[in-house]
Image (cartoon, rainbow, N blue to C red; front, side, top):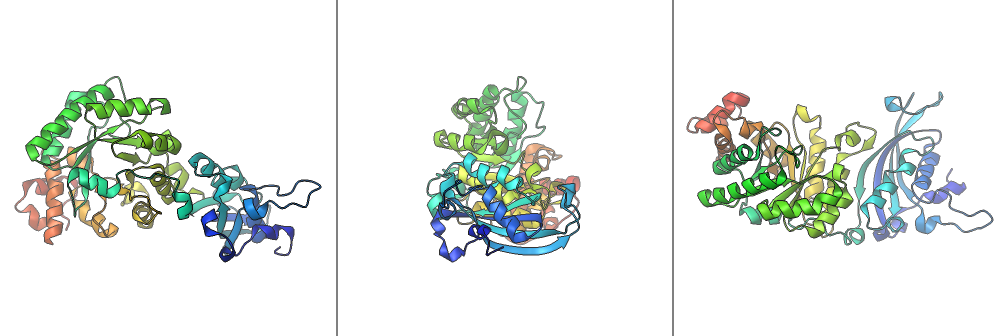
Amino acid sequence: MQESDWAGFFADPQALDSDAYIKLEYYLECVGDPELAAAHFCAEQSTAQWRRVGSNEDLRPRFGARVIGLEVLGTQPDFSYGIGNAKGEPVHACRVTIAHPHGNFGPRIPNLLSAVCGEGTFFSPGAAVVKLLDVHFPDAYLAHFEGPRFGVEGIRDMLQAYDRPIFFGVIKPNIGLPPDVFSDLGYQSWLGGLDIAKDDEMLGDTDWCPLQERSRLLGEARRRAEVETGTPKIYLANITDEVDRLIEQHDLAVANGANALLINAMPVGLSAVRMLRKHARVPLIAHFPFIAPFSRLGNFGIHSQVFSKLQRLAGFDSIIMPGFGERMHTSDEEVLANVDACLGPMGSLKRSLPVPGGSDWAGTLKTLHDKVGTVDFGFVPGRGVFGHPMGPQGGAKSIRQAWDAIVAGVSLDERAKTHTELEAAMTAFGGRRS
């Protein structure tokens, strides 16, 4: 195949201008010659036809996506998941690395996604099963994006909280409470030691808990808690809505005292988030609805770390993601890849605070800290604070007591002997854990 005309979709990476290309890593299953399938794959997501009839021009040197790495991982009798028709031919499982010229779509997230995970990618001949595993952006491309305004360091400065995780809490019950009851729960959690009390990602601007009243009461409660504790606090208001209401909802919530905003990134759209980032003057925090349907299958869709990178690119200061533990159906390796997408180098973009979440309480804090290997993360219990037997103030205290035990190098059992809130949490949520 390399001697055919399709060879023009292959390149030596050393011969390419690295600033002009993004690098894409895919898993794909194909029938026939894997090299020909990879060449088709590049053609479909870039030039498709690369010559006019009757012309000798070749558009590929400037506009063609190129295969710069191809590894055949093995063969199998059929495509995974019952997708596609192998027609009795062996199916090759491959890992393909592609250099795609970003001049084809420019620094525009919708156009980027249309190219690298659009029709050409998922409907390429002979390759029925595809997963975008990772994307690497050159600094020349990243320079066109603002990225996070605050990032990890900015959020720490707001809270005057250094050398430890940032303690979030999802106010529970998350749906059904009127604003006054909801705000009192947040207030109690701040008194107990939470840094950030947040709306649930499902709680929008509803008739029984409208954002106008909810943000006003939580803004007032936040300021009272700051006076009483002597420490800064954040109320994280969910403004997820139709795109044409985002600016209005931002202005309303911030005027009422919300000093950070939650947006469900993929339901709203990353381009909308990038627009909001240019207007916003408070941190933007991402939540992960609508990502699992793209990423859950091991060999099909889009790896969740791609979404983390794109959310950071769009301007999120912090990214809430599926965390450790069986409930989230996410491997430790995938969680850590998402954490690295938030904290690893991305040109001059600031780091986003990763917040791996899911059924956390005081007893899971040490495990999370040990696995992440840094204090630069957010810890986001829900019922672990708001379902605590001693109320949200006691729940928040149990989290801080667990962190003090970690810093002191003592077990939770030992710390709980003199801290009733931690003892109550261990009894209620999981027995004794070190």
